[in-house]
Length: 288
Image 1 (cartoon, helix red, strand yellow):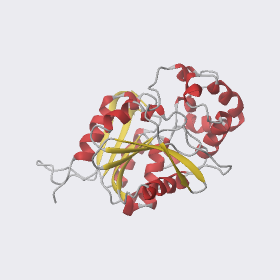
Image 2 (image 1 turned 180 degrees about the vertical axis):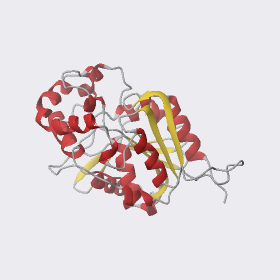
Image 3 (image 1 turned 180 degrees about the horizontal axis):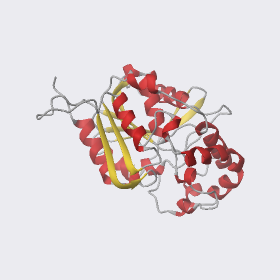
Image 4 (image 1 turned 90 degrees about the vertical axis):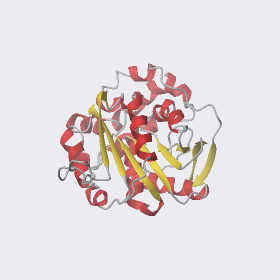
């Protein structure tokens, strides 16, 4: 669900040296929710859209993708607890708790309903938001996230299993990297330990996925760390891929699937196609 770190040995931290976009320059705000303080930023105008970053590095989502989406929507960009500029607690992380945190931030902002777009870890949070808070959701965009742990390749599962034991060494290297300087308040060893503990848990949210009523767009890389058969099954759980759509397309599912060529899980958010497809989907209104 998270970053290149999941699929690479800890000694290969070249990703921390990459010239990713800096955090947004405009100061954000803090919301006191569920025992902690979450940092968020509001950008743009229009229909509300919550954007949820992937694990470890919020700037992947809150750099160029945020700027692009804010041209079309009122974006509420939320740092998950323990990430970016948000505070943390001693409690373990869960996608369920993070989804409740999103709902609490929206309540403080007096936003009754919003679309939600999440990448990787943020995609899992967005999926839980759809399951746990369906009345608060307009449209849903899931980017490179699985609905069950079995959807990830075995080597990814193994990397997460090993991560807590290596948290101090990995976190120490990140703290000295450009990423560490962007987010100086993060306790990197603790982040890596909690990241591993969260992601090594088995999960299967297929029952909840079947119950999602909001229009949904799934976006994946063609070389994702999620198995292609799982991607197809995810779309089928949402009602897609059941039959031919007909010559005029009238029999197609209202939900959509995009597989971006020439990308991986770790490069997907750098592709302009992600924001292009997401913007078109979120702006489109179906007339029944």
